Amino acid sequence: MSKFVITCIAHGKNLPQETIDQIAKEIIKSSTKETSIKNIKKLSTRATDIFVEVAESVLQKTFRNELMCLIEGRDDVDLIVSADNEYRQAKKLFVFDMDSTLIYQEVIELIAAYAGVEKQVHDITERAMNNELDFKESLRERVKLLKGLQIDTLYDEIKQKLEITKGVPELCKFLHDKDCKLAVLSGGFIQFASFIKDQLNLDFCKANLLEVGAGGKLTGKTLGPIVDGQCKSETLLQLCNDYTVPVEASCMVGDGGNDLPAMAAAGFGIAWNAKPKVQNAAPCRLNTESMTDILYILGYTDDEIYDRQ
Ligand SMILES: [Mg+2]
Image: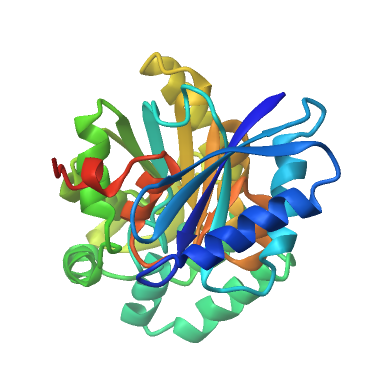
């Protein structure tokens, strides 16, 4: 038998007992293979773990897809399926995307607004979302629009606008206290990724570098290899190697299509308030308000998270 744990996380303040009962009943009813519930553990008023055993032949992904059908159309709860093993809680590397993940905004849009080219940048983003352009092309085209921009005041003005996502500082502190390494890998720009790295005391950052030409003006190009999905995935595996962390003990958190390869390469992946396509393709989705909810996915209780005895 395979052991899985289903974490139910409410979007609101409470996860009603009847919702838990309903989900538990559905798990048994809908499953074609022999599935049994072994234990139910309350993590907080908003989160509960349901421990199940399923036939060895049932893959975690298949089981997860079955569960997703159960809650289709519901926007009050997320169900996350994890393998019930030592690596679930003992994560030693967390890698985060930056834009719309660690921070609320998309930095390229902030720069575009600063430069007065919002419309053009928005059009390119739309085309990329419709798969007319891949990530690298769309980045090149958007960066081209920034040519001639003076960087002297740009960086500081943008940095002041960056807003860290709710729950991120608490999550990062908690994970650091558990000896977990933390990294940000961004398809945006290094000046801002390293600023966020310093703000959150992260261990590593990687992002694209905007080229600066004569007179401190942007040339409209980036320098060095572009950080795209493949680069994020390779860097995650490199970090596992550098920090001597088993891949199973790593986790990728992001919202974009370019975060999916790293989610697939990592031990676990979390689509954070992501686009629908990303939510479906990722190992799990979390559509709540605070990123500290990730600690429920690792099986921590409120008493452990908030150090209450
Ligand atoms: Mg993003």
